Length: 482
Image (cartoon, rainbow, N blue to C red; front, side, top):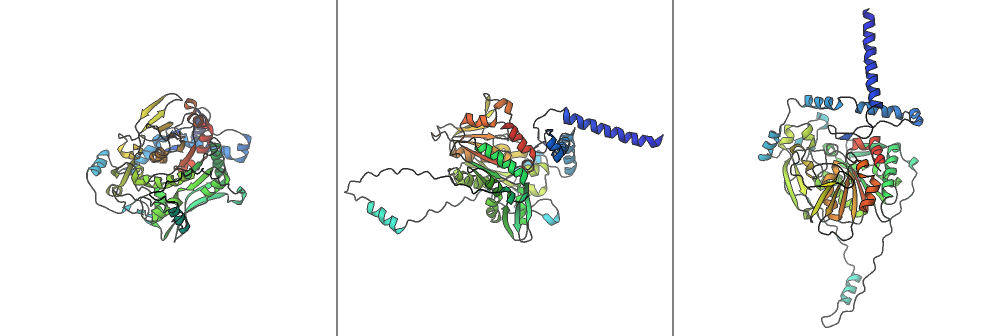
């Protein structure tokens, strides 16, 4: 009799697992779901088509869906994190203790293996580097002489000078490319004297889908509107460049490929290539205790992206600014260490130079006004002081009349876009902020309807959660909301 018990138990267990999987696959509500524990979108139920079944993508999608929607999964993850942190917990009292007492400067080392220790330079507590203004070309002798000749004497009556007509600059046309000439998988790498290492990578099939999505968004813009796109890696990944021998910067195939296959009014920028030299020069562009870029790092990239749309930001120090020190961010929140406490970050809190109001929409017609800076933001997640963190469709608009041109930009971003709001609000009369993880199409309308309703002129796509971005769930979510 005993020889039948174990097979029977195993069979019952398999049957239960099958029933749980069937329930999750066919009976749970469809649609996007966000995991606050992991700060990402969970996989959605795959669509059943014969093509997907034979290609294997249906089985892959089913596996991702079941692993993401397993009952009590969030509780298991939280319990695992708690066990990992036993003996190294820090309470809110610990944070306040650090906040009330200045701490000595120390080199920060993240608790990783000896072979991959992360050492990043200590930033100044107050001064933040300001980009040098672009030097203006010197006048040629001919121009100087001409200007001197045209300068009227004190007794002469000046001749009226006709106002020159502006000459529109034609949009550059991209060279046609053949996607087949590119490798099947493309990478962003950090370059150093002891070898190159991957920061993130994307399969060509997925990158082509992303390019098609960006083209679809760009088609909603006016004739002179532009769409600018960038990917921001986790700070711990970017900072790792400094731990290698002879760091040389970053090089990426991902953004150039997306740039090449998209329409003429779509531009793709590589954040780490733009921030590589500042990072190696010791500038404070990525946090150590938080997964995000710093506000200054975001400024350097956003100002470059805005140039493509014909907008110019004032110098960084021109923005009204206050600083919070110490700042202990998301990495410390999830795995607090004494090293981070003794060498915390500094959080710059910027606001536009003119007054704005912030509206967070619940439906197409209903909204509530929220503060631009949420002073009650959680002490363990102070990065969310901007707007109180990600949320539903949010509109930031000037209250002083603005430029009179009704310039409106649409910013598609996850939490990495929060600190960019002051920059966009400085250059545009209205900023429409959209996070696909929180957006509800059935209540607010499709993205295309929102873009038309607010008269969007330019669009910016800023993606920081690379795990979600290089997954079909991001594309699926955006397509369903389009």
